[in-house]
Length: 219
Image (cartoon, rainbow, N blue to C red; front, side, top):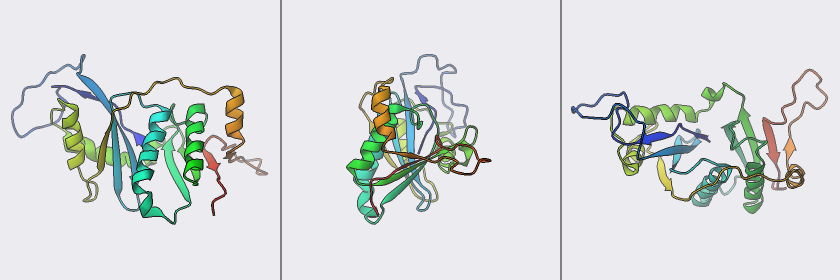
């Protein structure tokens, strides 16, 4: 899972090329709006699910789209009991972000899943396979004018990754940032998760914020 940088919506020059001469604005100080693409990528089957939002990308947004994905696709993975989620250690999905951890634990419990959160360290997000799909999307709409949200969605729907087009959805809910748990409430969440530590290996760093297991007793 990962987010792409927000995209300005308007008649702006995006630095690409178009076969047809087109007039654009060379400044984008006042876009009509902006959208943020957030993706769920399944590397083994080369399938991409893109969620666009004009709202803020918050912890609640991230878990909401994960839940939407699982509701629509879990029938294909009936034998799966554990989900491994690779992601960057961003501000809204960090293992120290209290609202994110609360929501992801609730997700695991609700759907009776074991979840391992595996974070890429700083400056290593390029190793996340979903990063290559962002390049494909950028190349696909490069040189085109994204003057409406629907235009951006249509381009996303017609891009391909290894011959497959993504599932694209627009999330219309508005999200508020800054939602946090109290220390006491977060301690209750900590009691439901397991952070990977260095155990008895004194020469290894503590990896407690990079690998987190949420076990619901499912085998």
